[in-house]
Image (cartoon, rainbow, N blue to C red; front, side, top):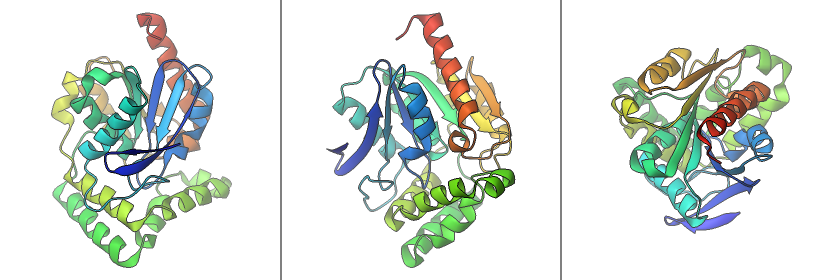
Length: 269
């Protein structure tokens, strides 16, 4: 489905019925990274997965895609669909967006799922590197970003044993426009440190991380878990950064158990 919001056309997929769950993808990917979870969760819940600005089938715009801007895009979509408070999940950059959304619109969030992400801002060096990458992509195309990054998405074992999955993700990245990639890079470079905000999060929170994630590490996840009161941390074995596709059964089990326990305990639904 496609709808015009915040000055751009936003594409989204939805399925199921019941308590709304919104799943936000990472950079430079699209909503299909959540396909195994959408299929699983839509048996019991309404699952909404948008393509962020400049990614997938959503329209690009020029300039930085700050995490607040992307959060406001998601909020506009939730408003458009008249959804009650949602369970909000985000992977990698999607986690940055989820934290921005939580800060901006806390009354719209019933629970959080933070997958393979972190609270800290970029270092000065990382920020400079992202800004340089953005300019390189706008000049030369996406190859210089996609080629090294796709190798970090999966463990060496998965890359060796499931090359079709790796190629699927490579094509997904390559289909993201240079404008979209540059906008996301500049937006991530500008994001603030969310660590001081973690202690104010008062909704149930599940934190997931691949045991071999080299981009947002287990240590990053542990720091978030220590900062968010009563959060749950699940380390997904034999997985790198893209846990949702690399280890879907384990991720589905973790999210399903979290939601089941949440709604059973609180009576939400």
